[in-house]
Image 1 (cartoon, rainbow, N blue to C red):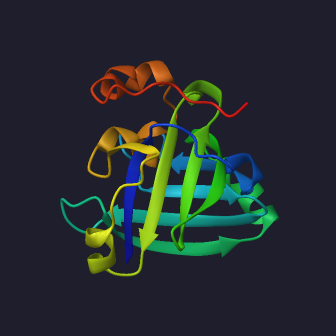
Image 2: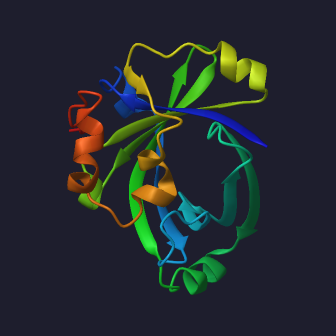
Image 3: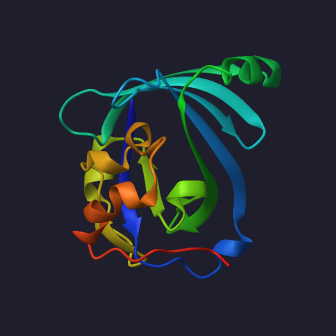
Length: 171
């Protein structure tokens, strides 16, 4: 079980450039699915295939099953027709936690999301949104990875305007 919250970034916090980072490439399959829950991932130098689905209407609680792959397996599976999304993930320390700050690339350039993971439902519920975050979008399906794959910033721009979101980029 995975407990997490997702936020739109208001601004990129100081020191982000100095944090550990990695490129993440997700391939969601099948391509024909509106919101695929199966993804093949290159996560820095690690590779995996994951099925991730909400256990209820609460998108902050997901059942996740992951199988680790080697690079050869990833390369073979990633040839499968699927929608892709690419981002740089920064691991930003924040009050004893790690904020995963995703700066999206390619057609989604300008989008920055912040994820926090929790061990328990109680930890998740007690967590307060950091000041560098604009809005809690955990329950907003338009920012789910399976919904973002294969889309562009223009495709989600109207959804983002509802939060007065401003494009962000790391120089």
